Image (cartoon, rainbow, N blue to C red):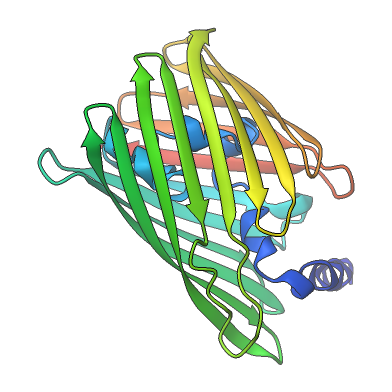
Amino acid sequence: MRHFIFQGFFLVLFCPRLFSAFEEKPFSARSAALGESLVGSSEGLDASHENPGALVFAERSGISLGHTALYGDTELPHNALSGVFSTKRFGAGGFFLTDFGSSLYREQEAGVSWAGKVADRAGLGVTLKRQDVEIERYGRLSAFQVDVGLFGRPLPKVGAGVCVKNMTQSKLSGTPEGAPALFSAGISVNALAQGPTSLAVVSESGGNVSWRVGQEAWLHPAFALRAGFETEPNRFTLGMGFRRSFFALDYAFLTDPLLPDQHSFNISFFQ
């Protein structure tokens, strides 16, 4: 009963603006722990989703699997798979898949990305993605979207990026509703605690603006602590990461002003 009550609440909350749900769930544990502020500091396996322009700065190829019990409910899982592969001559590619919900309400998103260098210290990337919403008794609705991102390193310890998500604002099949475009911009400075300090702002075409900040601190070459904050809604984030030569484990804890807290996990493997 609790499960159906919660999903009913979720449908009432999100169905009037179906596409908002795709953007309100952190993609990875590292992104969540840093307040989703990675548009100017996204050089990992989540670059395809956070800022495709950063793909050319990924140090290694690999794949990552993530899981979140959204709002603390184990019956509302949010699962993600992402990957990055680099080439020396033809830039870098990436992909991501996400799946959220149950038989009553389900969201799925799949994207493929490619990026190339436009200067010695800058990369430009594009993501083509498909978004699907399936609601029991209403069927499946889908749309294709395009994201464009630019990422650069003006200084060795400074990163900056901008990204426009849902730039095409394609409509859900059979409905008059279009996806809101999301513009994000951010910077990162790797000057404190052996980790980046990141700041980002995200603006929705409907007028909502969210500010995000995060701090990563590598206390040991294999262990990091993370913390962040974001507005709209206001919530604090904490997390940690463990890294070895060929794999990494990440965890994040997120508060919420109205709903239960969340826990996110990622396991990654590198080439």
